[in-house]
Amino acid sequence: MEGNAGGFGGGMFFIVIIGVMILFMFLSSRSQKKAQEMRQSMLRSIKAGDEIETVARQIGKVLSISGERVTIDVGPDAKHPMQMVVHLEGIMRVLKDEPKLEENKS
Image (cartoon, rainbow, N blue to C red):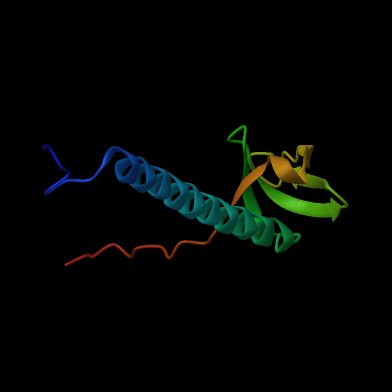
């Protein structure tokens, strides 16, 4: 007589595999939802004067926001202004001012 001594039965193994898959799907959807909420929060916090990067890797300064349209200045400097209108969802990230490293002149 052969038994299931020391191992899972076929049905029990199948249940464990299904349980692991459900757990993986649950954790994956939670992290995806959290990332989506963080992105929406970032988009809602954009204001005139912020420096942003678009999904097309264009970097510019926000001039105005009207609904889902964002007007940005992408000119190389103040003498050469160039405006561009992008959809709010086309903004990849807000560039934060990074502290400038002072050169150590010793």
